[in-house]
Image (cartoon, rainbow, N blue to C red):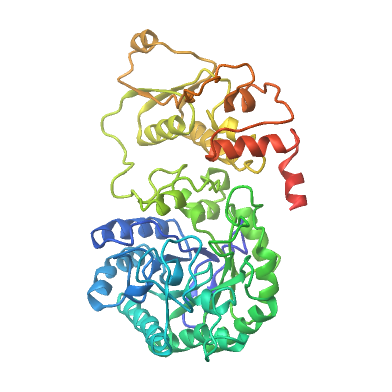
Length: 533
């Protein structure tokens, strides 16, 4: 029994195999899944997290067939050649003592392709393409494609698969009246709408046998009009268990839902109550998810019986060694996910490779290799914002002698501005982490210090890194020099008085943050926010 987190780090016996702890790395599309020539990068990405001690990892989504692709020529698992390629991933993970499942995801009407399909031809509000309605014959074929994809994943030596049936993808589209208005045996009544999901799990279990993990990711809250009722969810959960699922994972909200579920302003573990409610319905393990980003929160969920496992995707993007650090009682050294979405989801939706704002090495493990140096240098880093803190601590960890300069009286740079926005108190975690790393690796921190080139020359630094951030752009709008016109720094940093009626020019992230700041009472605490939520 681990003395620090005895419940979170306890093993879980699944009957035919055992997970070494209760931490699942949830599925997250990184952009490494879609191109065969990225397979070694994908392997390195998961191997590092296996080395970090995660109990079970789940890949980004792979479609069981062409018409279920998320984007043209996107990730699929439908043949032995692809499966053989994936043995590089599974071997890398197993060599590090880890376990990994492949997620099978049919995008349905969320597919960003002109050949997408769904339960009906109702267009999604978040994609430009109208799907074709699946015929009964095509539905049967699609279910068989799921079973084949599971067999191919098994052939690739994955430890199991996850069937993605939440977040508004194809199976979820069949389950909800919002999309499924069919009048045949695949639509209409709740029983008929569940048929596709249940039959998929049953046929996958038949294909892979008993000793193979099947995770079913179930939508516990659709958060859209025309979604499933709780009574329907409970009935479905029992049927999914009977059909052969090993674990039920939690999904919250469709991608088209207007209610936030994963951003910083969502309270930590906000949806674990739903997992607790479902856990009373079934006898197989149930996994909680969404905004679980510290070992303390995860331990509390398991200890209170709200779930048997916890799923963390982005937290393990931010720190692949989350679990091993928790196991060693070094929770203060975990690089905490702040749910900013800037380099993970934002990059993915722009069809770029994902990374992490607080961990630039994420998804770049084969390129950014932080190895001990044989050529030690004296390095000056100018600017103690996120980039400067990251550069200085990595350099010091590698063995260089590093001095970090900033004219401010505290580390953090513009994070100190951002953290004032209601709901963004998690940004403090980044300062806590880098503060600990600066101390651990002996970075010479010099605050309240304005440094000139001559100063650096006198001290004899071998290298200088300038990480002084950005200067706000002043748009060439007539009247911008008027005394009533302010920048976001005037408001958030300098606390200049603002009138009762405000126009914000620019609807990007900073514009929204300023608006959020202005509509709340200054000084209102995050705790008060959470109580209201």
